[in-house]
Length: 199
Image 1 (tube, helix red, strand yellow):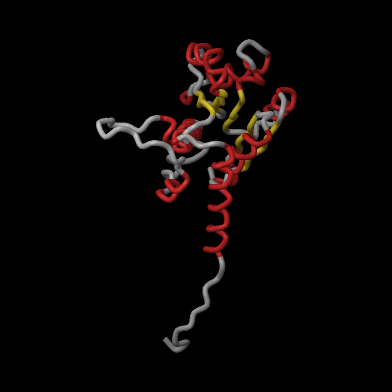
Image 2 (tube, helix red, strand yellow):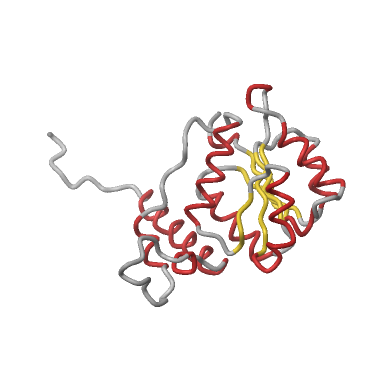
Protein backbone atom coordinates (compact mmCIF):
# COMPACT_ATOMS: atom_id res chain seq x y z
CA UNK A 1 0.00 0.00 0.00
CA UNK A 2 1.53 3.38 -0.94
CA UNK A 3 2.33 5.69 1.99
CA UNK A 4 -0.48 8.14 1.16
CA UNK A 5 -3.01 5.35 1.74
CA UNK A 6 -1.73 4.52 5.22
CA UNK A 7 -4.26 5.99 7.62
CA UNK A 8 -3.44 6.51 11.29
CA UNK A 9 -6.10 7.63 13.75
CA UNK A 10 -4.89 9.25 16.97
CA UNK A 11 -7.13 9.50 20.03
CA UNK A 12 -5.72 12.08 22.43
CA UNK A 13 -7.15 15.12 24.21
CA UNK A 14 -3.67 16.42 25.09
CA UNK A 15 -3.30 18.99 22.28
CA UNK A 16 0.46 19.34 22.58
CA UNK A 17 1.07 15.58 22.78
CA UNK A 18 -1.30 14.85 19.89
CA UNK A 19 0.37 17.53 17.76
CA UNK A 20 3.82 16.03 18.38
CA UNK A 21 2.61 12.53 17.45
CA UNK A 22 0.92 13.90 14.31
CA UNK A 23 4.09 15.71 13.21
CA UNK A 24 6.20 12.57 13.68
CA UNK A 25 3.79 10.45 11.63
CA UNK A 26 3.13 13.16 9.01
CA UNK A 27 6.88 13.24 8.36
CA UNK A 28 6.61 9.64 7.11
CA UNK A 29 4.02 10.69 4.51
CA UNK A 30 1.10 8.99 6.25
CA UNK A 31 -2.42 10.40 6.58
CA UNK A 32 -3.03 11.22 10.23
CA UNK A 33 -6.25 12.34 11.92
CA UNK A 34 -6.47 13.36 15.56
CA UNK A 35 -9.72 12.99 17.51
CA UNK A 36 -10.21 14.09 21.09
CA UNK A 37 -12.93 11.75 22.37
CA UNK A 38 -14.13 8.16 22.01
CA UNK A 39 -17.37 9.15 20.27
CA UNK A 40 -15.37 10.68 17.40
CA UNK A 41 -13.02 7.67 17.45
CA UNK A 42 -15.86 5.17 17.03
CA UNK A 43 -17.40 7.24 14.21
CA UNK A 44 -14.05 7.27 12.37
CA UNK A 45 -13.55 3.52 12.87
CA UNK A 46 -16.78 2.88 10.94
CA UNK A 47 -15.21 4.38 7.79
CA UNK A 48 -12.69 1.52 7.58
CA UNK A 49 -10.00 3.96 6.42
CA UNK A 50 -7.54 3.36 9.24
CA UNK A 51 -4.62 0.93 9.48
CA UNK A 52 -3.57 1.94 12.98
CA UNK A 53 -5.21 3.55 16.00
CA UNK A 54 -2.94 5.23 18.54
CA UNK A 55 -5.07 5.77 21.66
CA UNK A 56 -4.45 7.52 24.94
CA UNK A 57 -5.55 4.85 27.41
CA UNK A 58 -6.82 7.49 29.85
CA UNK A 59 -9.60 8.29 27.34
CA UNK A 60 -10.62 4.69 26.62
CA UNK A 61 -10.08 3.29 30.11
CA UNK A 62 -9.70 -0.49 30.32
CA UNK A 63 -13.35 -1.46 30.65
CA UNK A 64 -15.27 1.06 28.55
CA UNK A 65 -17.09 0.50 25.25
CA UNK A 66 -14.26 1.97 23.13
CA UNK A 67 -11.65 -0.21 24.86
CA UNK A 68 -13.70 -3.36 24.20
CA UNK A 69 -14.07 -2.48 20.51
CA UNK A 70 -10.37 -1.68 20.10
CA UNK A 71 -9.41 -4.91 21.89
CA UNK A 72 -11.66 -6.91 19.54
CA UNK A 73 -10.19 -5.22 16.45
CA UNK A 74 -6.67 -5.89 17.71
CA UNK A 75 -7.44 -9.56 18.38
CA UNK A 76 -7.94 -10.39 14.68
CA UNK A 77 -4.78 -12.14 13.53
CA UNK A 78 -2.85 -11.28 10.39
CA UNK A 79 -3.68 -14.78 9.08
CA UNK A 80 -7.38 -13.97 9.45
CA UNK A 81 -7.00 -10.77 7.43
CA UNK A 82 -6.46 -8.17 10.15
CA UNK A 83 -6.74 -4.68 8.68
CA UNK A 84 -6.15 -2.56 11.76
CA UNK A 85 -3.80 -2.49 14.73
CA UNK A 86 -3.94 -0.63 18.05
CA UNK A 87 -1.13 1.10 19.97
CA UNK A 88 -1.84 2.60 23.37
CA UNK A 89 -0.17 5.69 24.82
CA UNK A 90 0.16 5.60 28.60
CA UNK A 91 1.07 8.76 30.51
CA UNK A 92 3.92 7.65 32.77
CA UNK A 93 2.20 9.00 35.89
CA UNK A 94 -0.69 6.54 35.37
CA UNK A 95 1.33 3.55 34.13
CA UNK A 96 0.76 1.35 37.18
CA UNK A 97 -2.96 1.72 36.67
CA UNK A 98 -3.00 0.50 33.04
CA UNK A 99 0.09 -1.57 32.15
CA UNK A 100 -1.13 -4.80 33.78
CA UNK A 101 -4.48 -4.62 31.96
CA UNK A 102 -2.90 -3.94 28.57
CA UNK A 103 -0.35 -6.71 28.99
CA UNK A 104 -3.09 -9.16 30.03
CA UNK A 105 -5.04 -8.19 26.89
CA UNK A 106 -1.81 -8.48 24.82
CA UNK A 107 -2.16 -4.93 23.57
CA UNK A 108 0.98 -3.01 22.62
CA UNK A 109 1.70 0.28 24.36
CA UNK A 110 4.31 3.00 24.85
CA UNK A 111 4.84 5.10 27.94
CA UNK A 112 4.82 8.86 27.50
CA UNK A 113 7.34 10.51 27.41
CA UNK A 114 8.58 7.90 24.99
CA UNK A 115 11.81 7.19 23.19
CA UNK A 116 11.23 8.32 19.60
CA UNK A 117 13.01 5.31 18.09
CA UNK A 118 10.91 2.85 20.15
CA UNK A 119 7.73 4.66 19.19
CA UNK A 120 8.46 4.62 15.45
CA UNK A 121 9.60 1.00 15.64
CA UNK A 122 6.32 -0.09 17.26
CA UNK A 123 4.26 1.92 14.77
CA UNK A 124 6.25 0.39 11.91
CA UNK A 125 5.89 -3.19 13.17
CA UNK A 126 2.13 -2.80 13.59
CA UNK A 127 1.72 -1.35 10.08
CA UNK A 128 3.78 -4.19 8.62
CA UNK A 129 1.50 -6.71 10.41
CA UNK A 130 -1.56 -5.42 8.54
CA UNK A 131 0.40 -4.99 5.29
CA UNK A 132 -0.12 -1.22 5.30
CA UNK A 133 3.60 -0.85 4.56
CA UNK A 134 5.94 -3.38 2.96
CA UNK A 135 8.76 -3.17 5.48
CA UNK A 136 9.97 -1.36 8.57
CA UNK A 137 10.38 2.40 8.28
CA UNK A 138 13.70 4.21 8.48
CA UNK A 139 15.85 4.17 11.57
CA UNK A 140 15.92 7.39 13.55
CA UNK A 141 18.54 9.61 11.92
CA UNK A 142 21.87 10.22 13.61
CA UNK A 143 21.26 13.95 13.71
CA UNK A 144 18.44 13.36 16.19
CA UNK A 145 21.24 12.91 18.70
CA UNK A 146 21.51 16.70 18.74
CA UNK A 147 18.24 16.77 20.67
CA UNK A 148 19.53 14.63 23.53
CA UNK A 149 18.83 16.11 26.89
CA UNK A 150 21.86 17.41 28.71
CA UNK A 151 21.83 14.95 31.53
CA UNK A 152 24.62 13.26 33.40
CA UNK A 153 26.27 10.61 31.31
CA UNK A 154 25.60 7.02 32.29
CA UNK A 155 28.48 5.37 34.21
CA UNK A 156 31.27 3.82 32.15
CA UNK A 157 30.43 0.33 33.42
CA UNK A 158 26.86 0.64 32.18
CA UNK A 159 26.18 -1.21 28.96
CA UNK A 160 22.97 0.71 28.22
CA UNK A 161 22.05 4.32 28.78
CA UNK A 162 19.21 4.95 31.17
CA UNK A 163 15.75 5.57 29.71
CA UNK A 164 15.90 9.21 30.86
CA UNK A 165 19.03 9.87 28.81
CA UNK A 166 17.11 9.28 25.60
CA UNK A 167 13.61 10.42 26.53
CA UNK A 168 12.17 13.49 24.86
CA UNK A 169 9.40 15.87 25.74
CA UNK A 170 6.60 16.61 23.29
CA UNK A 171 8.13 20.08 22.76
CA UNK A 172 11.50 18.56 21.79
CA UNK A 173 9.84 16.13 19.39
CA UNK A 174 7.83 18.95 17.79
CA UNK A 175 10.99 21.05 17.38
CA UNK A 176 12.84 18.10 15.82
CA UNK A 177 10.06 17.49 13.32
CA UNK A 178 9.93 21.21 12.48
CA UNK A 179 13.68 21.15 11.76
CA UNK A 180 13.26 17.99 9.68
CA UNK A 181 10.47 19.64 7.65
CA UNK A 182 12.57 22.73 6.96
CA UNK A 183 15.51 20.55 5.92
CA UNK A 184 13.27 18.54 3.57
CA UNK A 185 11.91 21.77 1.99
CA UNK A 186 15.41 23.11 1.42
CA UNK A 187 16.40 19.85 -0.30
CA UNK A 188 13.40 20.08 -2.67
CA UNK A 189 14.47 23.43 -4.18
CA UNK A 190 15.53 22.95 -7.81
CA UNK A 191 19.23 23.12 -8.46
CA UNK A 192 20.51 25.34 -11.26
CA UNK A 193 22.92 23.57 -13.59
CA UNK A 194 25.82 25.90 -14.24
CA UNK A 195 27.69 23.37 -16.37
CA UNK A 196 28.36 23.50 -20.09
CA UNK A 197 24.97 23.16 -21.90
CA UNK A 198 26.68 21.33 -24.81
CA UNK A 199 27.83 18.45 -22.59
